[in-house]
Length: 604
Image (cartoon, rainbow, N blue to C red; front, side, top):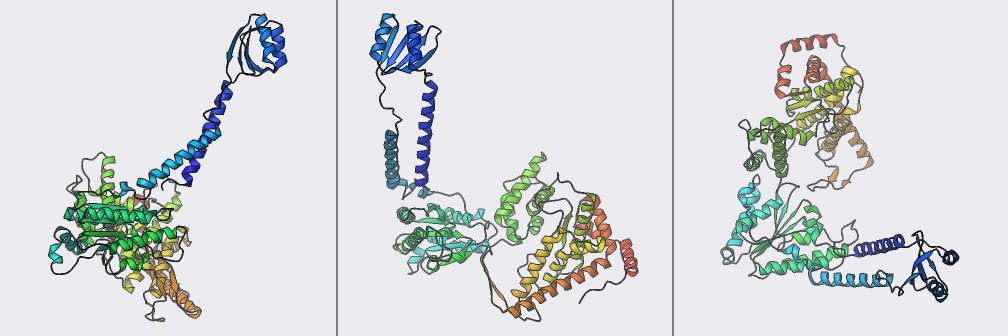
């Protein structure tokens, strides 16, 4: 924000503070006061050695070198007595108006305000030239962008147009004026925009959508016009607007707050400028957003942002290439296999992979290593996914035991179900908010989910709570997040994905399809249907719970052994879990315990 009423209030407060400080300073310098009769008594007793007179104020020094001041109503009478006693007399003229008088201070503040307003109006207030200085040459190219080959292919012809526009214009065609890069945070939208400018070797104007928005109406529109004026002079060039949803939201959208007039004027100016390019002006507008659903439709029509490039999190091959790009800047050990790291990080974006490699380097540096090893990458990944270890947390032995059986229940169900993701690591060391974590990593990236996989996921989530019930015949709050996740999956199976035999293939809610998935959900069914939906959700969870109970009761020996191993080691990996599950002695124990256990009955 530039000069505003808030800044003016700050200036007033500073001025008041200065006046108060001056008053305190004067009070500290002021001599103690005595009444006039006391002064005259000392004068008559010849105890005064010298005086200084300023107007009617007399500063006196007695024979004990004590100084004080008093006010004389008749200075002439006092002078006659002082002269008779041959006392040293000095005089000063009365003081004039102080430079810190309130009136003069108001004049100074008014002049300062006027100067700032003129300064900002003439240079930075509207135009803000410092924000629109282009980067002449970027050393970032498409080689620095990995993991999004489809997006790069779509933008190759944009680079060719910037380099050789006649190739397209001689046939009568024209390149799209605007390119909208849309995707979740951290997928490389800004990096890709810089790579376009770096490949083409053209000036790069970079601004954020919030840079246009001000509290003063008309400032944003003026900045837009100034930006495009500057860009046209530097053509061919690229204008990059990051987080364009800050200024490009739909006009008249519900829930608009104050300052909407300024936002709409800025958007209108942007729309007009995008339509105002002449045939010889090669200016490409590239914008980035993770909320394309809130953008004004006028921005997305042909002739403006008519090319929209989706940038999604990379697949396993893309993650490997991104890791290789970042690994070039680091000292890696011979045991590091980036292929395995890529497979173990499904869903990671480019920014998250960069953070993973940086955290790995920090982990290795803390241990005074000369290079990064696989164990450092694993520790960094655990820190990112599960949180930092809470080493100082005091846990009772009973809590450790409950946590061990809870995590063992998750792991056994996950390992025995054919459609579940395999277990990667189990730990009962508290991390973040969790007392323990069972980490699963899919063998391949999944883009769609079957009903069997979703049921396996629900059963795995219920495995911890079920193990607590079997072993301790009680429930703890440790299963709260598991129950929330299981209920959410079951709800989506019925309401969004049509996986109910009773209700049929119909979606009962219309969910927001934005990348952040933070929008509202619209109900489109009756109360009778709502009761049926509740019954179907309960049925899915109850069926999965009963199947989970049968699995764990049939593998009770494995449950005990896995929990005991966790209590000793605190953290075990997938290989150790497989060794325990393949133990023949435990299999025999399972059969004996199952024969001696009464068959559990379940409510219908």
